[in-house]
Image 1 (spheres, protein in one colour):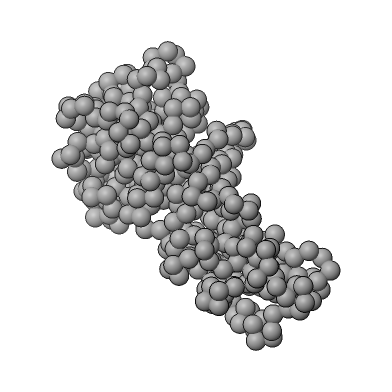
Image 2: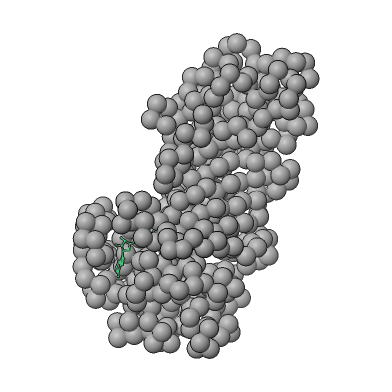
Length: 414
Ligand SMILES: NC(=O)c1ccc[n+]([C@@H]2O[C@H](COP(=O)([O-])OP(=O)(O)OC[C@H]3O[C@@H](n4cnc5c(N)ncnc54)[C@H](O)[C@@H]3O)[C@@H](O)[C@H]2O)c1
């Protein structure tokens, strides 16, 4: 069964190979459906080669100009890569409608497809496109799962794709040795509605979350800002550090009550481990904790700093003291989302922060809203995580596949 490729904590390929054809169902060209035939035996053998076979054969399909979609209209509906060949389709003796096979990009495939530097470019572009009204993003829907955490459904459309991320935030999972963030990012064609790909959402989330911190720093930090303080060195703190480094920031101070997490990150980045007080004193401070307690106090702030507050992405979480917020020039990813369930939400509910006092990052990037006004200002970016960021990563993964730089880790029949 293909579904055995989905262990707890993210999409990862089975140890025996990145793709294992399931069952006895026959893979066929769509055009051969009409003729009642399947793939030639040689094609079936090639398809069963496992690792490496899938992407390669789809690329071969691209070379012959028809791909697995053949000449039929249905083939065009199943075209996964813009301008590329169609997805594989299973038939059941030609009597039951074909079953579409959708490429899965697991954790490693997503990370192989998109570097931190590219994630920064894609996420920046996503903010710009959304601010310009080209990309659409309905509100995120939360499904509470007390006392463990919550699920989020995050849709967006743009660049010919529609995505839905179904993702968790289970903050105490680290205590159980499980990731706080798990789920899947589904990508469909906005032209035909066809499902195009399933991406591991942990990898996509980490890339786009870290990238947002870097985009905010480039847009809002002082020109001379270099040093980084990372408070919370878990999964997404690590990617924030990697993306900030890719954006030219560093060296940094890594702080986490789990000494091993701080040490691992410091060693990877060639930065150093430090106390919260040391981390919060750096030029660019990124907070990526579960948001159970404030880690940035008003007394910590120094003129000219930039704070990227990433951890509080739902109502009830907070990493920054209210008095500290009052000392900052405030920015967010999306006012509707941040005011309802971000770092700013408590201050908004208490009437301490009003919408006109908070700039959206996309508006800053497009020049519609002013960014930092002087070198002494402390800027704070409240990131709640947007579906447009995930869309930016999904587009990048599909582009990498089209360019032959990455292959799916599996095909799943749907
Ligand atoms: N804004 C976004 O787009 C976005 C995206 C993903 C996750 N998040 C949120 O970020 C938070 C962290 O997510 P994660 O996946 O990295 O979780 P994680 O469990 O992997 O990492 C959290 C880290 O914070 C550390 N920590 C806890 N309390 C701390 C404190 N007082 N000071 C310093 N470090 C502390 C933990 O030891 C752990 O290493 C969660 O609340 C999650 O919901 C936000």
